[in-house]
Image (tube, rainbow, N blue to C red):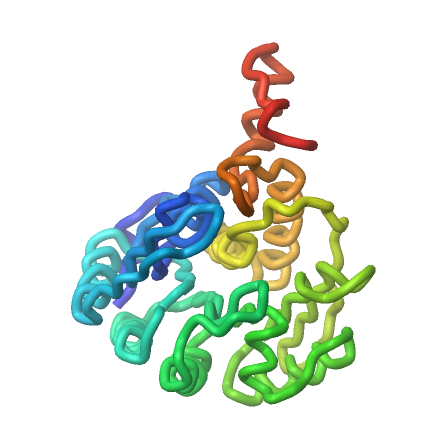
Length: 288
């Protein structure tokens, strides 16, 4: 049972993998929670050796260890919202689904990390099936990119209408609300997302930010949704606020490493402080 009374401040839980490069996964989630003044807790599913150039190695934790982390957090601290990221394999997905059920975790944001932004499938078919059949029906919202939506639906997604059809099909899998992300679409469609809650469609757009440093955008969006839910926002407001946050973070994306840098989770705040106090010059790192 979720012990909400144990915490007087908003608490969010991320169940995801560790990114040693600090741009995505648990690291991105916790920074996002902190920016939203939400206490962040975590359950690691896997450890990656990665940087801005790519992933060199992935080591999965035991499903029992993942479940134990979730139980330890919930039974003592309590959580107001939970998000999942990279769950890696069928066994971990089933363990997480069991924990969500047993601990009555509400306001669950599922980022189905199955396919990279480049279209490369990251988990095997048995893991995809477990995610679809056991975790998605427990989610308050699921946030697939277009490649992940294609896997769930069997559709080819090239435009907004395709995204609407995909959202409908994913909703029929038992998901309460679907947000199909259009970050990989071409031209002026890039960044347009489709919301569907079983009754209403909404096309959500934000300013297109031209940057190659976009590592961690999916993790950051789902973490921001969870943070806003933990703060008491309704789901639609949580999504809109999360999209605004990601857009702002993209404006201050970081040029670190030799490859694709991460979004700037906290740099808008630092730059605001620097302007007010006349201290800290981050211009060599950011491009507002």
